[in-house]
Image (cartoon, rainbow, N blue to C red; front, side, top):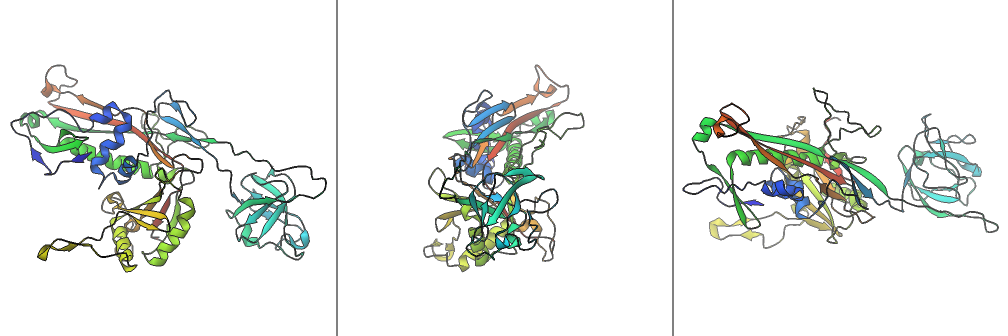
Length: 479
């Protein structure tokens, strides 16, 4: 979907076709994201990228019930999550606020081969397995089956070491620190049990959000027959849209793009009830965007772009970036205009600018220094200057240097598949876009209102399935 060159035009001596920009979306819900690609350079940057790459569901309906999707309501879809058979566990504080208990050596747990307890967030590691701690040197041997105790899973362990005086550095046992099962260790004679694990698939929940827009006109405005507008093209077919229609769709694209990135669910995770109600007491159901799905985004504070910042970022995100359907490991980096400028300037200092960047002749010569992507060690970063992150239209907090806090925002979204082979991110929709006119007396015939004016309404219901780990870079506004 694109606007034909020439911008605003006037229609004269010919009929407007009556085909609206939203016609495809009206007939087919899977085409709704495509409709908004007309605004891909401004209001619908991420929405358009996902649509172009085909990262959207197809042919879902209210009766879908297969191995990948279950439609459980008119606005609620379950999606399969293929669980990874390689998992980490995390140390967790129990109801008493501790992550470990060692009566013999409270500050040197495990010393002299004394057993002690650790508390973790799952029962994935168990009897006679060895778990490796975050320093990649310390190993713990699990003596018994995990047991639910004091609000966490309790493991009875010993330090696995050839030195009897060794003990565990308690800093490795802090809340949230990682561990992973790496091997088993059994007695050589008369061992009784083996390790078995079954990583069954789970189901995630995607709630759709409904948005609605309108434009209106008075009878006098209609009588003036203002025909200023735009010609749009989609798959070789052209349609004329009025200025009012264009502005309505532009606003809708901006809001939908925000929804799939930053939208928040109004459904309680603990009770599965809609907790947001309007003034009439009716439920207002909304779904989570990518940044608020699952455990949310990993936040990375930074001051400004520099080679060391980029290197640290790539190191941080590398393990989360998997291959997509095209075999590439890609991550989209949506950048506020100021962050995008800083990123481009940094890349120039790193020697990215090469020959053949000059275009034109004589006094018309210019240099193009914009790149569609940067690939480092097989990881492709797709930088996207995002007007949707512009502090001109988003609230921010003014910093001491005169910029705003969100002038430095960067949102990073992986585009690869999950370890189970599912798409990491997918746009989803069930019902087609709806369009209707509330006719006033100016329309004549059967009317819905005696007002000398009419309205055109659209509504659409969309959501996003996110199985990935997003990231957000930001400049802190509090020291």
